[in-house]
Length: 188
Length: 149
Image (cartoon, rainbow over all chains, first blue to last red; front, side, top):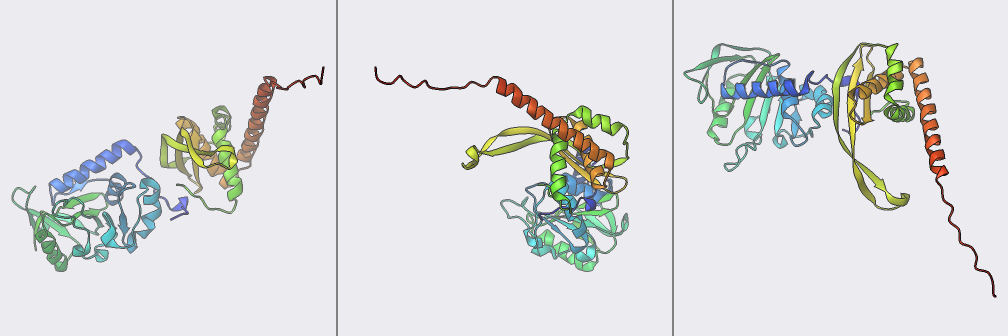
């Protein structure tokens, strides 16, 4: 990444401080209330702008590769070739999701050193579909995600069994955002 | 961290340098009659850069000191993008320099004139400073001791 083509660069936050705070707040809200839909403009890109910096290694799925110049320009984050080396993974569609068990899950002493996935999904609704339970959910929450199938549910179960290790997920659909932390139990 | 590749890299490098050193008033004067709508890629932000130097042109590199700069990037509605890294904390100056950079890339003749005016102005300033320094020049010389008494 030596040359940077400005023509390919997405505009950053209009108000860098306030918008980054709002995006961070949305991320916090989404992870503390799994399954709840949180509003966040340009959710996936806003999360990247708010969370990435020089110290976060990022992997982009093939469909998200066109965002590389923008992310390099705005955040200065290093990009990695292999998903298992990344702290953050930006995935353009559910079909490009890497196997969760191959990703950095942290260690028992430092479970926070695990990967966080930001996944753009085509549809995200909270009426029907999966039944979610766990910390942050009073009784049960529903979540319908297009593109994530039973195979994902199996992977998620395995991810939960690694606790305290494991990865956390942000599901983004346009300006809607939903958190799926490793503590959440997912029933199909 | 910012590398821009285009066919007139040499001249762009030069005009970016001239715009960065141009006085704000000159940039303001030319901006008044060339208002083009644009969108920010990166709003002006002020920070520090480490200036490195080499003593005597051949010595080891060393960190001379930190310098305040303001940078920004924007895109004109026509499509050209401009960047600016200017000394100091003036957001307005960074904005105007980036606008001029974008216009120069789309071949704006009036902005070329601005660059030439800036070049002449800076050359004049350099000359003035040289004269001022020359006026205080002290010639040291040693009188030869009178030979044998």
